[in-house]
Amino acid sequence: MTEVIKIIYVTDWAVENYLPNRDPFGDVILGLDAQITIQNSVPETFDEIDLLILHPMQMNSSIFETISRSKLENPAIKTVVISSAHGSDLFLQAIDVGVDKYLLKPLLPSAVQKVAERLIRQSLEAKQAQKAFKQINLMFGAISKTSLLIRMEENGLIIEVNDLLCRLLGYQSDTMIGSHWMRFVERRFWNFLRSLVRERLRAGEIYRGILEMVNAKGEPITVDSTIYAIRNQHQEIEEIVCIAQDVSEVNRAILASVEQLIDYESSLTVLFNHRYEAILINKKHLESNGFKNNEEFFSSCALCRWYVETSHGLEQITESGASRKEVLESIFTRVNSGNIEGRLVMEYLNLDKQFFTVHISSMPNPMIRSEEYHILYFIDVTHLERLKEDKINDAKLMSVGRLAAAITHEINTPITYIKGNLELLEWECEEKMPEAVASFQPIREGIARIESIVSSMYEFAGTGKEEMKPCNINMTLIYALRIILNRSKHIAPIWINDALFTALSTYDATACMTMGISNRLEQVWIILLNNALDEFEKGTIPYENRRIDIHFNCTQELINITVSDNAGGIPESMLEGIFDFAISGEKKKSMGIGLNVAKAIIEKHGGNIKVRNENQGAAFKISLKTYEEKADVV
Image (cartoon, rainbow, N blue to C red):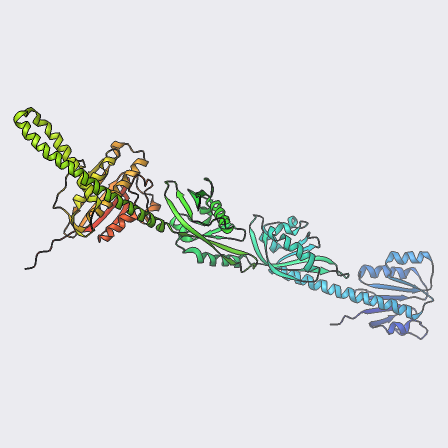
């Protein structure tokens, strides 16, 4: 709607709102583009008057009183006095009461017209500015109820904030007003905002985009912002206004979707933000390691050491005592910079190792396109490393088997001579030196023990083709026990079906038969027993309190074997994956073969193996099928 300027022309020349031709300025006044009212007395109120022109025939004090009252009632009113009265006193009074223009006669009508038109323009501009100001205030009032609002000077000092923003950031308004607004903005946006003011806002552009503000706790708040400049009549920036919406929930929803993407990865998977800070761990890894949430995981101390494989061997990545968050961020930094080319090795306190290959996947942040999320995947290749170790150990075993076969052959030959000659010597002594006959018994026992050990070594060497055939479980246990007796007798006593095993222990040749490969089953018993002995060596249990028990029994369908100890048991966190990789920490003292091999052998025999903690130790329970001899069909 077009603004209308209201002019009151008060003149003594007027007669009942009529201007006779003798008023020299009447035609000019009436010709102005405005709503003109002519009267010969001053109005009672001045609220709606834009321009008051006074043209008295004679000046008097009431003129200035009228001007003064009009300014009090309506500060925006423009006033003009046309008079022939000269004198400095009059000018000073006019200035004191705020007369906008004091015109002295004689005066051309065109001069009055120019002055009036200029004052009309000023009034129009003032009205438009006032209207715009009201609209801005109305707009700010509406925005303040639904959006975040900051008004600041061109130099960035805050002059106004709304309550919604104060509540969101956790500050009082008087704390924010007078501060530089970048104090409340994430530091990485500072350079961008400086260039935004310096270049784009001064060029008249409006910025729309994502910013991150920082609340009183130092936490980031993501906002979708609109930033523009308010200019004065010289096109200079007077104010900068930032109107924003809190989109933190949207940002959290994006993070939740990324979290779902990694949650069910089977191995360790870590999400990093644009600052390379670890922010999320996959749910499966947290649960399998007993952590309730990411914060608990990140703040806990790493109970292992990380290494990277290099051409010179293993190089340690992190020092002991670092938190898991620090360790992961250190690994990410090295992988991202290309400083890690080989595999990563995680070493536990018991010196067991896990092997990983790693790679990074990046995705843009939908909220801030210039930033990315990064996912660090740890791919567990321990089983491949164990498979390689097992192949090496199998090759070693084959070499040991061949060596054992050669040794047993070499030992058997002189033992045969010794036994034959001992019998001849004993016959001679019976006739000529009967008192020496008693001395032959220890010699016979020694020869029997040598034969027993040689027999066990020959059986364990497993020379020839491996074939499934009926074998005696009791025999395989005795042979295995003989192999490790030289070690076990110094570490812990072993009981088999509640009888203490010694070098002279024998087996029942007809009990508990199964279809299998004897030397492979012996290999299983040796693995289980050596792991138990390893645990006793690492512990502090006195010898007299140590015990390894082997129990076996057989039914028509199954043979059940239990190998248990009281060495302290297996950590609960390791029980589920105990057969996935080698657990023994002292491989040099054991066969160097893990429980995965034992499990594979038992399953190859159609059986199963389980483990649980009981009686302050570990108990391995093995089940095998009982062999039934088929009757000959006639």
